[in-house]
Length: 602
Image (cartoon, rainbow, N blue to C red; front, side, top):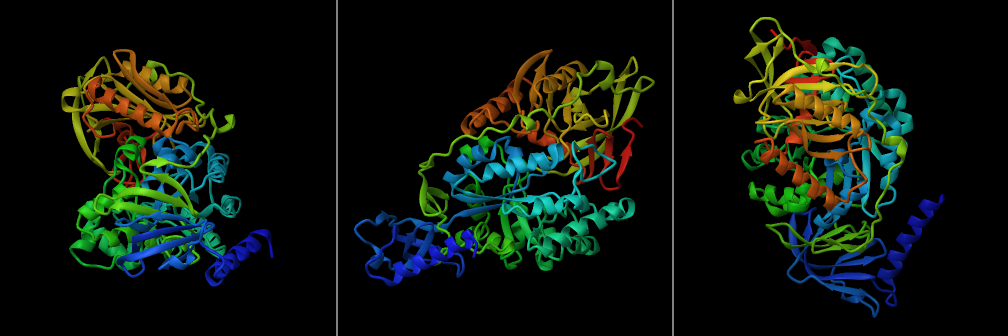
């Protein structure tokens, strides 16, 4: 028996001895609370007794209280399994795993399942392993679902590294890797089958290997129905999830197929109110309905909370409180096959959230493996900051740009151009055309109509390309915004009301080795270096980052006149070519539904 199994066996024996020997007692008893039983969907009065890192029993624990037992009075409060976020990206918060966890733990979230797809696109296996190694130092449980393919759409975008089935053995056998992450490479089932069929073979090879070693596989099926949805499910090994579901009709069909619908309610993509209608209006079973955040900014984490806030909003949408809590406890635990979390029962890991107000989802205390780790919104354990190696901090390999490189040109005095239309709080975009003035061969923005140039500048030192198009819906009145966060290959994306400010903003991002920059009339309005892969920082704490992002949002509103919620996140998703309709990469304007590059100027 190896050391890990031996220690586990000894722990189980210690639990049994404590229960059966009248001379032995619990370490901690949460006394007189209302236990939330997510197995039977009940709430009833009971104690929760803890020994070491595990739950001894749930019920009358008076006989397990000894002279050294820590008795915690929770009368009038609700005792719940710790919450699970089943799909999230640390890169979207621009925080290290450690700093995100410091903000998340006090909100009752005790398990995070993260997809390092973003850093994988930039830095490949090396970048993902750096992030995975960080999680080994933390008291909360952090697991990963790794990409089976980068870039998602080869030939239409340029990533910093390529990942495929050849890399799965190296990635999937890490104990902190739960399985394969979202199958974005097969989101657009029809176009991939028609134009990139070899990708399907490579994807299936990865999936079959993952299943053979007991790993899970996550799907990504925006807008798929019927045969296309069935093909996506089969490609994922017959049981997958989908966090890109946006309508009641999609939710119903996926639940009926056995898909775990990861109902997303993050900072910029809020799909829960629509998706939850499948349950509130049609009365379907919710056991495969799972709440996730996907992408959250630190400001929202600090102001509103993490999974507790998503549960609160779900309750407000008409779901019974215990059923909503099931969607962040037993439902995800069942989906992933977690044997030791997700319920309050003997022998389970003592990851527990004590809730003082069920409707508001106010978290009073949080226990991680039996240790009280947060109380009234503040950490009670010391978690040292984590510094990443320099090898992940030099990912921008682009020389400064010249103005003539970024101009969009046309002949004549007017041009009809294709325009990407932003859909607020969605990954999806619309598509339209606009008539713009051409001055000295340059197509000019129309700020009054909110039609602005948008560029994606390859930054990995590979293609050297610059994609050019127009966008409507970013609601800028002045200046420009640039950032090195642009899903999923994370080249530099920039939009603005004039080419001069766009040039300065993009070059500022290059000079910072990644980050966010806003320029107005040639001057820096606000910026934020993100040196870890051009995506994250280890130079700020979570609180400092929250304050910084809040300040950047204020500057965007007040200095640039930006009228869209979380503009940096909305801008970053305009490069996500795995979701319809039109997007932009370093290759140009992309018709995501037909896998083709479209001319910007008609």
